[in-house]
Every structure is written in C-alpha cells, then in structure tokens.
Length: 454
Image 1 (cartoon, helix red, strand yellow):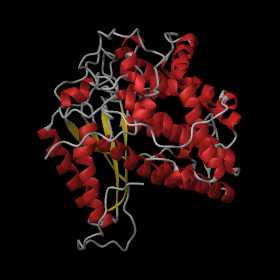
Image 2 (cartoon, one colour):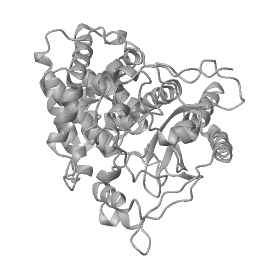
Image 3 (spheres, one colour):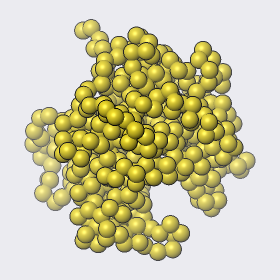
C-alpha cells in the first residue's frame, strides 16, 4: 500500500526511547470540500512528521456536530514529541486556512431537519443538550477555525483497549489509502468516490466473510441500518433501489464474483490497482482480530449498554467489526448515509445473483476513463460534471437509487454545506445526481487524474 513517507527518519534530537505519546486530536472546522485540505495540507504534514521520526500514528474522520469538520488524530512518537507535533500541525492548518479559506458557512436553519435526524440517530436527549443553544438549534463553531480537543476512543464499539489499538492501526492504513486516492484519482466527482467505495467494501467483506450468503445477509443488514438512519419519511422506496440496480447490477455482480474468487484462490493480493494492497491489509486485519478473540482480549459493549460482551470466536468478532470498519472508510471518502444504504442494497443483491453468472469477470484492471480533475476549488465544490468525457456508454457504473430523471437538477443544492458531509440530507438535497454523473463509477474509479503541465 502506498505510504506518505519514503525516506528514513532524520535525527531531530527528540528522545524516542520512551515509547509513543498519547493520542492528540485537532478539529478543523472548514465549510468547504475538504479534498484539498487533505491533499495540500494534511498529507505533507504527515509525510514531514514521519520523515522526522515524530509520528507513531495518525488518522482522520469527517464529522458534523457543531458544524462540518475534519477530526485529525495524531500520535506522537514520544511524549517529548507532543508539543512539536501539535505546533507543526497547527502551523500547517493555519497556513492552509489563510491560503484557501472556505467562503461559505453552513446555515443552521437550512440543515435543521438534518441535524435533528442525526441527533436522534447518534445521541440521547441528555447528550445532545450540550450542543444546543437556547432556541434548541445546534451551536456552530466558527468557520475556518480549529481547536485541540480530547481524544475519546470508542472502546465499547471496537472491543476494548486491544480492539481500539487494532482499529487505530487500521484507520491509519485507511486514511493513507484515501488521501492517496484523493490525490491521484478523479475523486472530485462524487460518482467516482461511490465506485471506489463499492470496490473497497467488496474487498473488505470478502476478507472478513468467506461465505457468500452470509456476506449477502450482512449487506442486507447494512442497508437496513443506514436506511433507518436517514429515510425516516420513506422518501426512497424499494422500487427506487431495484430500478437503480437494474441499470448496474450485472457489472457489479461480475466484479464482486471476481474479487471473491481471488480470495478463494489465495490471489487477492494480486488484484489490480489499489485493491491488491488493500486486500493484503484486510487479510492481516482479519488475522489480528482472530488472534485477539482467541486470547479473550475483545470486550464489546452489549447492545443494551448494560454489560461487556467478550467475544472469543474470531468470526463473530469480525462480523461485529465489519460494519464500523466499512463505515469509517466510507466516511473518509465522503459517502453520505444515503450512499451507504444504497451500496449495502446493491452489494447484497449482487451476491445473491452471483450464482447465476456463468462467466464471472476476471480480476483485470478497470478500463480507463478520460476525466481529468479540474484545478479550481469552485469546480471541486460543485462536482456536477459528467463522470467521463467519453460518455456513460464506455463504462459500467453505479446509478443512485435517489437519482432524478436525466437532465434535471436539484434546485436546492447551495453553498450552505459541503458535498462531502457524511450526514444524511432530506430527500430533496440528498445528493441526487443524473445518470451521466453516476455512470462509470466502478470502472472509472481507478483512472488516474491527468497531470497538470509544469
């Protein structure tokens, strides 16, 4: 897998013998697409800290409470390195925000229904109260700002301290991968990110659940979980999902079959492009989970929050962890909850229909697309251009279940919130895209962007 540092650590005079320092957290409130923040600021920051031997680990997530923001997690290589790591990080963030400030702030009234749904989904009434103003609206942090915050690992979700340590290692690999994809591929187009997410989900699931029917059951549950999170009004019907699948299903079935066949034959590390290294990582991740389970080191919070649940069966632990692992990589890619529900639905159906495919697609690399990433932030924020300059007929892509008729546009898409926010939006602004925009997602996802002339 591509990493962000290639040179040996320099001697900085920092005492690195005492072991890693404590995890640090910086929240960056930035009301624009965060693609360039990650590629132009965070990526070189991480590379420099690694090169200088100052960093033991890192990852990022996107979040929405108090305004859309990026949560940057940094673990210094020693306690003594903490101050320099934080100061260098804050200097890099400040430089970026001065150079490329977000021009628009979120309108809390416009997104009030969204925030209400998200609070209902993630927080109790008592927990949400500290984020609300006297009028019951969520307080928003200042745009183009950042702050140091406590790092609060989710021990109950990931299996206790040992499980969190594995999750942090996995999150670093996921963050490295996503940043590299953002830098080198046409990910300014949401359709491309959708295709990338689908393929990474296929690989991760194949590593964690070898039984196709059990995997299909998992994805049906994945769909139902995220659909409950956003579609409380029934705006998206089963017919919407079925119609979208009818346009894309055979290609997805063949691709998923090829990936699962590679795992069965032991050749998954040779899958094309980024899928091979990701498969290698997921195989190791699954192995680490099994080892911890065998030792009795994975203690999860029970579903009713009344007790710890120690899982000693590696397969059961892997199934429990698969949902949050998939979700966090999708979060980094900027997938919405509507996207996650859609992906779960089509992947489940693709697995169910795999047996009907007589000639599965081989694991050859995706065909090329011709789209180059535009240079301007304005184009990145709208991201409404076609997925391929050659047209949808050149690729086999994903079609969203919330897609309107071709040629129509959502009139409510404004600059009040970033396209990459991971919260679910009301149906009228849920990221609906035309067929042209979503065509080619699976195949075009692996096409490197055209390099700018020097």
